[in-house]
Image (cartoon, rainbow, N blue to C red):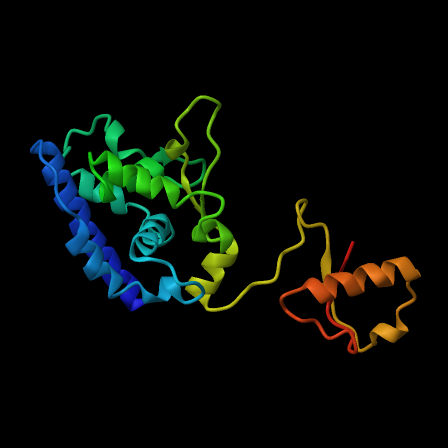
Length: 223
């Protein structure tokens, strides 16, 4: 976690450099800042070989979970009177009082006004991209006709749990997951199942990446 906090300090330096360049009507190369951040974001690639840029995207999306006023505190240095800052993107949520970064926030920080880089970064959010395949980061839905990159950055809870807590948490009973976890000493042979149901369970087990051992009764989720 200390490394992540150091990476946030370096992200703040990148944000300051980008804001300074923006309000001076010039561009800047963020690569040196990305190199520095990459030295402290290895934890973000523990579960997948994310590129340097993808690590930066994950870090930007992680900000509200660690420092709610991160973006506002830096932007205020350049806009002390406040005001609209469309180029930076960002949205407000219901419960969270700080700014939530969007795809436009990423484009501003990592690409500036360079169209080619902006397009390259947008491709990282494609359905066949590593971020999507690893179910780590996506863009929130936007209204029809609005730019895709105006969607907020959404980290999956599974990725957050693995990265911040170092473990996967079990799903909780809710309207979206109407099942509870049960523990039992019984074995699968003790379960009275219709042959078709048993076959379906075997098929799920065969295709499951966790390689469930059906010789022992696992934890069951039942309605």
